[in-house]
Amino acid sequence: MTENVYQIKKYELGKRVDIVLTKKINIYSRNHIINLIKRGRVKVNKNIIYSPATKLKELGFINVNNKDIKTTIKNTNLKLDVIFEDESIIVINKKAGVLTHASIGNMATSLVDVILEKGINLHVSKEGARAGVVHRLDKDTSGTIVFAKTELASNFLMQQFFLRKVDKIYEAIVWGKANPLMGKINIPIANFNKKKKASINKDAKSALTEYKTLQTSNNNFSLVECKIFTGRTHQIRIHMLSINCPLVGDPLYSKGRNLSSKIANKDVLAVKKFKRQALHSKQLGFIHPLTKKSMTFNAIKPDDFLALENTLFNN
Image 1 (cartoon, rainbow, N blue to C red):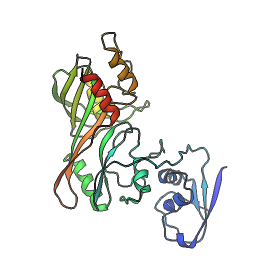
Image 2: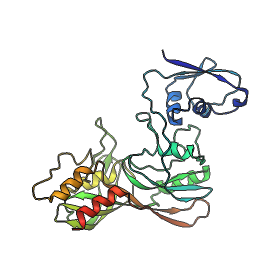
Image 3: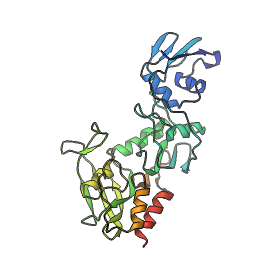
């Protein structure tokens, strides 16, 4: 058994065990530490604990069993693209390739890790696993995302998302040409299956997407604006697939899409070069939890998205 032992110092008494361990084992992210605790891999004075919020009450030792758990060395040198920040919230233009938050299945460095490592305080629930998180973006989706810095902000924002009062507008580059060019897709979406794919299911949760075609490229590709009124897993990706317009680069829902000989060579090269789903959260609007004023935030599209867009639509 791989077990490390750490002495509890006097100045650490009264502090949360996950915070203490993150400082002691500084090559792992806090979410990785939380994962260990929730799996019963941490003992405080010989007693197994399961809550990351457990506070250290007496001197002694912390035992950490890290055997057979995939670890990711913490890398928080990522630059934050902050759109807005005050005492209640922080709005960020998330880079593609970065998790919103870590999970049991994926403990890679997340945006939450980066924010906390920059010394920015986020609201932490008693569970402690998803500090500040009120919604999420897929790992390979870029764009606007908001985090809560206080309990009041967290509760207020989550209520707005629950009541569908948040404006969420995306841009996507898709295969083909939608018919009609604009419309609504109201098709229920089920949770992940064994292949980590969500799916259309009449008995699943309701999902509503409004789309509008902004540009087309010889009927081969389209630039589409999508407004979602719900927040189901992979909602835009699945809904666009349902009208035969899957997202370019989507590893789950556009596999098998052929680059025919009718497509220009430059377009073929651009699509092959694009290694993620072409989806960007361009606008987020909500009521500020403290001022109660309506606020709208826009995120500049990343370079890879712009390069693909320019190649496909600016002939």
